Amino acid sequence: MKTVAVPAAVTGALALVSAIFNWPFAVGVLIVLASFGLSSLVIAWAASVHPKLVMSAGLGTYILKMIVLFLVFGSFAVSGWDGLRPAAFGVLAGTLTWITTQGIATWRATSYMDRASRH
Image (cartoon, rainbow, N blue to C red; front, side, top):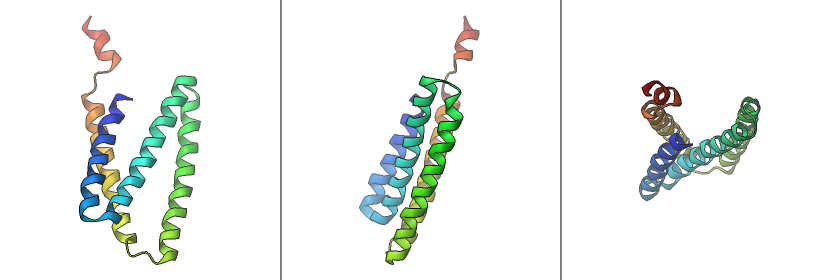
């Protein structure tokens, strides 16, 4: 769970900064923050209950997130909201930010195998 704090903080900072300049872009970033944060919590919960639940919980959460994402952006499109394109770019930027920072945080994290080999 520690490697989730870094991407959440960096993506949250991106949402705050972008809200100053372009709030529809920030809406897209916040959608990613909520989506990836929810996935991380569900997967961590499933792993704490039983490791065999992780795949099912991850896939179920992914399907639910995609349905909600399509409904949200579909309602944005039907309403004629002018912020649809900036929000979509916000989703793209938020996703790239989260994935990059989580990759870096995971790469730098010390695994239990590393600690065991030192002793």
